[in-house]
Length: 89
Image (cartoon, rainbow, N blue to C red):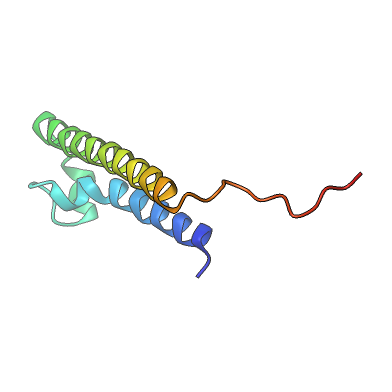
């Protein structure tokens, strides 16, 4: 599978999860119809914000670790970033 396509699928799954978060964790709602009748309380909204904040911090730390590992791998392999195949004049 194409890496770009996998990245798009991962972003799409993340967006669906964020949009479904109120439906999954709201204690007052069991279905979408109940969700429309009973909107989330302030406590629920704070809970959603807390979950999203924790996920954002985890994503940032994961990105930092990925960058660190990538730089270690590049230094260990000691290969140039690019190779010039031929020079056109």
